[in-house]
Image (cartoon, rainbow, N blue to C red):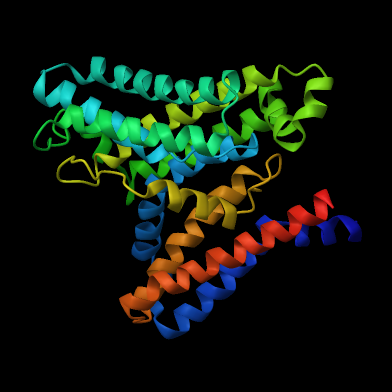
Length: 316
């Protein structure tokens, strides 16, 4: 029993929780607003959009890859949904499934490049990032598009004081946790990410796993596009720009290994909440805007160094 408790206390998720509690108490001593319900809701709301992208990126990293194009896929889906409703007058009930199909197809194309053509994931998705950004600009034309919030009021709904996007994020996290732990494909993702050659010898269809992972990543990015449209007053060529790097930073902070095959959904959820809690705390303690990115970057570097050290111990 003591050994089990000791093992749990050493886990990345428990460490994150303890750090968040201690840091939260310290910040609260400086500014009591930090632990007010309204502020906690603000942190969760801010984290929910990037959080869905984190779940998408997490799948790819567990598979042993990385997807730099997730932000561009979100942008493509946001433009597709907005254009179909606002420009072409489609029903939201028809446009929404099309948006999901667009995300699935763009993710699957990344999967073909990685699984079938054997391109390195970072090279393949860096290339498709430019391609998908080009699609976004083609869809926008010379201007921008208003998000179709009037046609899709459920996107701005609340349950009590909590915006619906928080429940979408947490609901997807629960579904993904069950998928990864209870399904055959979920266990194969960990196996392929941990040791692709060993997984192949055990009879795992590695190409099929890669293709499924990137397709699911694209599908989750499409869902993130729905949430994004509640945050912007218009959709332009810069929409969702840089979100891929925030997502990667958050999930590495949450213990998802850059080496693949290791990490939990709970860690990814805590990582993105911690990232936005840090942003929020720095504002509340009146840290200059010049230092906010520096402090956040330093925390991320520490997380990456810790992951690299753990990876060396694992593979050494």
